[in-house]
Length: 225
Length: 296
Image 1: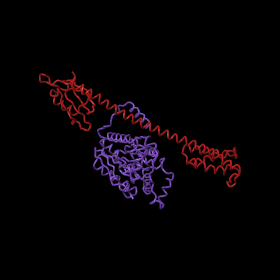
Image 2: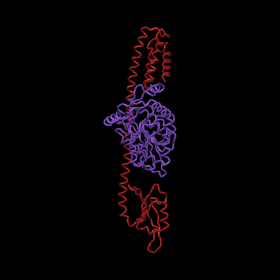
Image 3: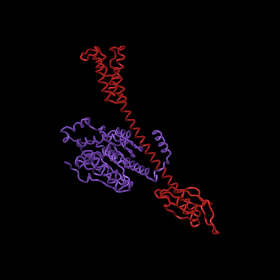
Image 4: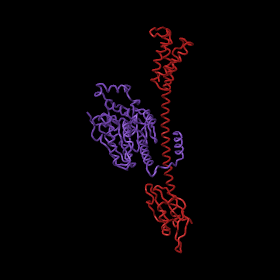
């Protein structure tokens, strides 16, 4: 990258040489060193500066094409060019370092924000579990006489292997319907055949609700009165 | 001549659930570095194993980096034979070794990189570090050792003073060795160079935790890994109150908690039952949408 910058700077300065002559022999290399410092860092820019000094002295300080001859123009270049270029590079380097430091601090802030959000999600989940537990605690005594069955949902359990507890109306439900529900009880409305007083079974509207509590997930199927 | 007692560099194993975590300590150090993290992960239900690796750990003969990787692979295979899920967690050069291990064993569940060290370019590194690569090929190879100095990777001043005293008494402390040989540093450089080439092939869930004021390996190491690793699930956490030894320094609790959370999330996300925790926080959902939009 330093070599490319030097080539471009030399090309530009050579193109302008008919107009500029021996004036400002190091400006193109100073700009190149500053740009390389901004985009690529300190070492490449110092390389550009040092090699640029030699090229500028050789090509653009009279007598042209000779580096062994040292006169006032050479001394002027050797003093002014490094002074200006080093000052520029130093300032840009300071800005780059503070920019890097600021970006890291921003990265820390972002990390902490994301940790906070994950903790917030945990808190929200816990609160939801508490609310659901309270709802379950209220639900059980309120619909005590209408409950057909309760099922604990195990994520790892295969269909039909979930633990089930009978409710007050469990014995009244048709055995085929109980088997069907055991295989795959889902939240929502269901129609279940329930025994009536005359020994016949009649279709009854039921609802299954899901409760996500601290102790796990439960499904409760009850008759809708 | 080493003065450390055998107990300081003994392997540690804490049995727990069927998700095991292989914990790799830093260069020429001991499993003691990982003790706090191993205990915390175990208290969260995970099985943890911090082995003493022949040729890599303190108190064993120094071997080439291929032997380090082979020893780590053996430990991984031993855990894989007993546990269905094995994750790898490494600290410092142990993180680089973990990357090499996961390249050899891509079946690993997740990889946790703590203060990953691909270059020793932190602010406390000596100015002449670039000469060490050449010094290896001189008679200095067997004479010169890099001696640890304050701050010993610790921002916590009380702990730093304690470690300073421990390093005067022994060659080994709970945050690492008091000195590292030139051949070990040379092999570490070779390991880092090989790992840099294979980062893109790594597809496992990856967690990076790095301190921005790390005095041994600058945050550019973590940035390099984050920019080049092929993982689709990548979480990067930067700390601002620790130096290099983040498992022992001021933010060790954060490191432990985030590591445990990440490993559990990785396990849940990959389980057949889809046990990943739902996102109910609106702020988190918004942030995840933003990140997904950036990733497009």
